[in-house]
Image (cartoon, rainbow, N blue to C red):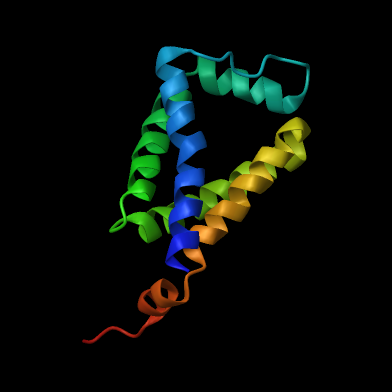
Length: 126
């Protein structure tokens, strides 16, 4: 199971670190407006400066996913974000659904680890 978690974490870190690096270095153009609400929202995120903050968050969580000690915590922190990414794509940007579903699958591969879940849910020793 640890191998599955490590592989899932590396795969999940790729779009996170990649999007942060792309935001800085501008290797690939972001989605252009096609008139959809999702594309309009992408423009607002980029033009309004929110993407700067998102890029920092993506980079930090992407790095944390690569470090064995912080991997599970990063996966737990990323899970609601990934669910939001899926919801955004399903409701506003359908062409992003395959990537969003892929991210959700690998995110679950990081957090659905019995030993880590038992430690997270164990009663405190107070």
